[in-house]
Amino acid sequence: MTKETQYEPTEAVLADFENARKFANKTHKKDVDWVLTRTSLTESFDDFFFNYIYVIVASGFRALTAARITQKLNDCHGDLEQMRKIFRNEQKIQAINTVWQKRGEWKTIRKTLTNVDSLKQFPRIGDIVKYHLARNIGLISCGKPDLHLVRYCEAHKISDPHQLINGISKKTGIIPGAADFMLWVWLSHSRGTKENACCNSEFILR
Image (cartoon, rainbow, N blue to C red; front, top):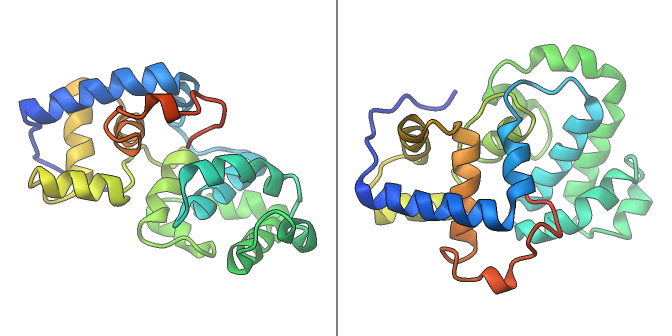
């Protein structure tokens, strides 16, 4: 579970978030709307599998890379040779293959997904990526403490990214997962200054 927080966002943080909210809704409204729907654990293996691929590809790579190749990898249905033609990270495609092989066990596995740490049973899901996957499959609406969020917290002397996101959520009424996504879109586009370089929803961002 994410940490409980007593953090009260400052006026500066709330002003930044308002800019982030506007920018994300302008450039990636479809993605914002999607994140807002992730409020209960998905029942579909296909949905889970797509989002699993996305988060492990995005880890250590640009989000745009994940956006461009996730559907292609998903369509390979775990075929290693086909995936190798698309993505040259052997460890990650092996992980994707491993999870694909478990599709027949999905109903049983789904029952074990009770908190963010339960996601670490899947290969390549560690202490940061588990939050990304948890948010995207609807297990829990939360922030993901990636580099953008960590640096923002350091700049504002906020001890924990979860405190930041939970504080913003409490103040604005926007669920934590969506608040996190909006802030991340803004930060990853250099605080909204790179709109011209934005794909403007040509590719999905998660």
